[in-house]
Length: 259
Image 1 (cartoon, one colour):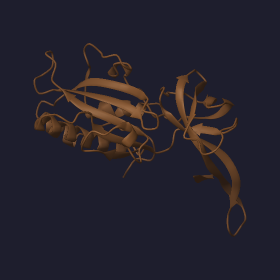
Image 2 (cartoon, one colour; image 1 turned 180 degrees about the horizontal axis):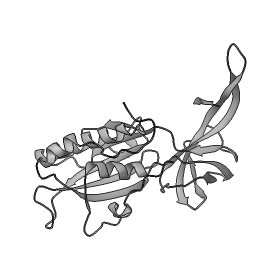
Image 3 (cartoon, helix red, strand yellow; image 1 turned 60 degrees about the horizontal axis):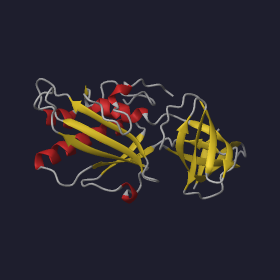
Image 4 (cartoon, helix red, strand yellow; image 1 turned 135 degrees about the vertical axis):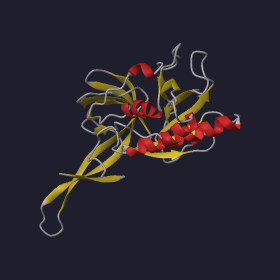
């Protein structure tokens, strides 16, 4: 694919929300759907760099600016092509970019990332650009098929609210699945977020169930993050109503504010 290119913001998120990859927190923190969205958003910084070295599928890329990347993330590898010009004035307006391959991050260092090439369209070379796309395609789906009708309604409400919140940032293009789906069956999305509702903890209010998320890429199935938390209910609204109508109070400033 060829793209025309014309001539980070930091968002601090409490990392304790995540239990750590493969490790469950003993007492999941309490938060809202907004908190879920903010933590998901924090995994997709405006990251860009250049490939330093290639050996077979193995790649080393030197990055610019704060990284904020996680292992399992998929970067796009592109190569600068010929310039394009204004059809009347002949003034150079920019250049084409050819998509070369996808790059799976396997290790993150202070100024570089290492990983491997997946699904190559061309041979990656030193000097090629690596970056996270401007728009991230994400799929939301329930994790389990056999569950009670009340749980199904809760999961649907959470996914609707999470969809609305992520879409409002302008960073994500979200697709929702009504039933569980395997990562390798997801189409038109680079990441799959599988969601499940868990029973309330003994120390939580009876109407405040937990929610667990697992995020993985759909190229190789690598797990990027796991999250478990208790969704806090407001004093006046039911939990389901809160999930269904909740909006970001302090959305990430990714661009001009909507009127």
